[in-house]
Image 1 (cartoon, rainbow, N blue to C red):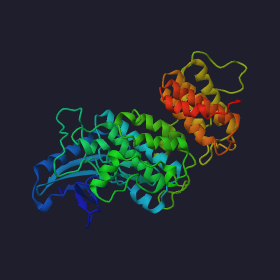
Image 2: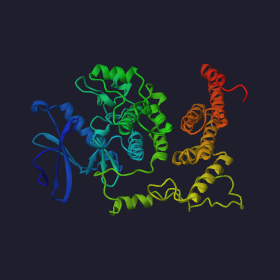
Image 3: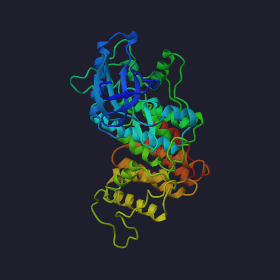
Image 4: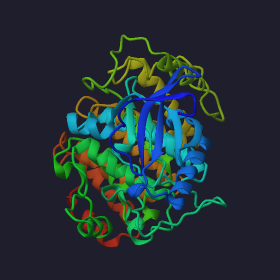
Length: 452
């Protein structure tokens, strides 16, 4: 084909708007994937061909390691085709079918990598519109590729149509946000976050949040019904992760997290103790150049914490520089106690200096890596400090959510009349009151023991 591409005898199954063939670029001697438009009944469709060319330009503009590289574009016997990097690995929908529910660490790792791609896409004014497990590929080194930008739109860019034609769905029904059902021609970045919430729910529970048997039932569920919490369907996940998924599945786009970068930050504390995915990954002992490269890159700014007004006191035992081994030791919560103390000291420095945003992120990260039964006092301290940080920057809703999640985490460990439980309930009630939730506050505060 085109004097340089040799294709395999049979195409790859699937594809939302085209047919993919694996093959070989004989000129550059590399493996490729070639995508053709699938014309209905073999008749040329000008609109579909223009959309296909648009996908080519969209993918070429997204220079990100989580998006397959575009090598070439052309036509063969009147059929447009796109030549791309061949991605080897397992489709995440197949991974879910084989191994669901996925380990919490792996679900968070996949979701965080998708967030990285979405940050790049949204900064380029692109909305994917069809994010789902079937469009995610987990490579054998653990990297994730986001596939199939065939439905992507660029609502903020001139020259890119955002019109969805009457004969096409603006996504895959099981992962479509309520606003996509109600107004397909005005997509927003929050729609991708909703689809990510559906994907995380499926990875963590093995089932989709909504599973209506008809288009109408699915639409009604996504638009009107409350999504089930993960622990309601039997998934054993931390309260904070359950809350994140529910936030992503909010009906109103404005009630979802502010962006993919925020979601990335909230997922990172859970990316530990990843465990094994049998058959999906190379053994840890196998040398991987990409992992080696990423390992160095992750340390580039590790030794340069955000500036604080004053240095640590001279009497401090803990260094705040670059010898923090907090993330060393795969499969361990901490490499050693010094790592925890160093990280905690850094959070306290940010807190004392008034850098509440960095302090909140660090306290949340520490709490996410602790085991509640063994570290109950530190879990409580970090959770309360994080809530205080949110309050001091005027984010009362995040402060309230942090304390509510903290209460759910520690309740199984502490007695119901434990003073620490009662103090948490009191603080929650006061935050509800200050946030205008008078009925909830009255109910919470009236439930407190009178003699405390």
